[in-house]
Length: 367
Image 1 (tube, rainbow, N blue to C red):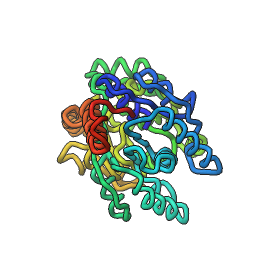
Image 2: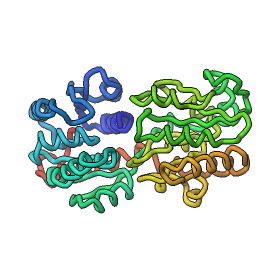
Image 3: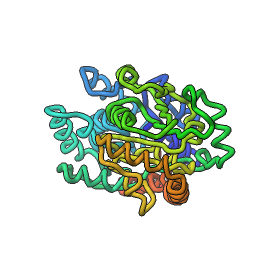
């Protein structure tokens, strides 16, 4: 989500908008947004609702009052909750869930989250989804809203194919698992180490793999790291957080993301734009990410280690298939997921809301 916001801010600032980003001080989003051209306001919010919510809502209300924005764009469940309560429709508001809150929890908590999303939709002029499947999930859950769908985009200048020399150079620059030769089959998973991203499913699949010399690398950090490391088969590398995932993507033969839920994951798009085949669980946004015709090779049911192991094995043991899939992924990503197109569509949505809210605001919008 931080990458999505930072990329949007960079494009918006370049187009003459005046973005203001409210986020926790010292966070990756704070530094990234400032470098991208935003004015950053400290908003000390936690990830989950709790006893601090009332204070976080009040702080958000003060920031909105001070900045006097033409549009408020609230990203993800927590900011969507606090931001919409703070504004309550007094400023044109876009809510972007980045995957639904009620998919992330179970039992009574899921019921409460869904109840809030149904109620809170009245305070969003638009709910912006990153995939049609994310929108359908919301609609089928009974959320009544004015919907927009704008797929995620990536920086195609940053994520580029490296060719064979790029793969070799990337492998030479990285601390790969012991015994990894230059031609060893390498699978890379990029993502926060959480239940959502399904690395536990990947480790279960990896125990089934029978590909000689194959290595697995998990790039990222998160609350589940200790438990994942404790159950990982021998030879799996945990890199921790990485400021630049491109070398890991370029070093990989296959990139994998076994998520339990998503809106439209960014890491697979980045890998595809680098010319890598990507195996994903068939959650929201996945079918809209892959090149048409490659669904059978690249999509597996969520929480199915056997299917995931079979898909990885097929790509690792069939170089011709892997190369063909990689070429199609590259063409598709570069044609469909340019962040400049995404930012332009979001700016158009802002302009529409501003125009509807008052003719004097038509020439300037503020995030």
